[in-house]
Image (cartoon, rainbow, N blue to C red; front, side, top):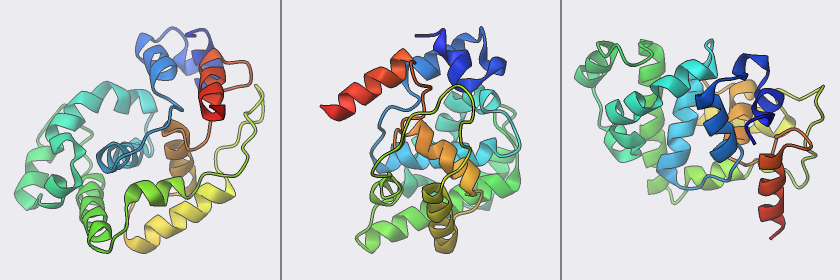
Amino acid sequence: MTNATELCFGSHAAGDPAYARYHDTEWGRPVHGETALFERLCLEGFQVGLSWRTVLGKRDAFREAFAGFDPARVAAFGAADVDRLMGDSRLIRNQAKIWACVRGAAIVEAMHVAGETLDALIWSAQPAHHPRPQLAGRATQSPGSAALARELHRRGFRFVGPVNVYATLQACGVINDHIVGCAAGDEIAAAARG
């Protein structure tokens, strides 16, 4: 499947084993659960203005530093934790993005108190039909990602624009955006059909 990595991600991913593993085993496969979805939403926020490869290379360090992205634990982070994270050279040290993650965790916890879940909110953006893209002309956002970005922003999340929310939807399998003919995308589509 790794030959499709460049087709699905672009020439910058060519020959990169980490990108190939991510493409073949994770990207576009359905993700559920508060912790897993919160992680993806935070990491896409950290990616804003950077390459996904940068985030991918730091993902294990992020998981360790952000308590496995457990929303309840991250929501309890305070200024001392943010200072600790800002001093961790393994991370993307952007104070606004770190605080956005902490604030996002508190929002997820408030959603739980209100009987809501991040899982239901993110998966509410799944379109009834999403044709997989051809080699040229792949979208970078959609009406669904724009609507979800507005809702996330309304609730207080930050670094949640239509483009990186679209990337979250791609990564979490809410949409299957593997290029037509990609074996990984075919496998995901077959699983979705049952």
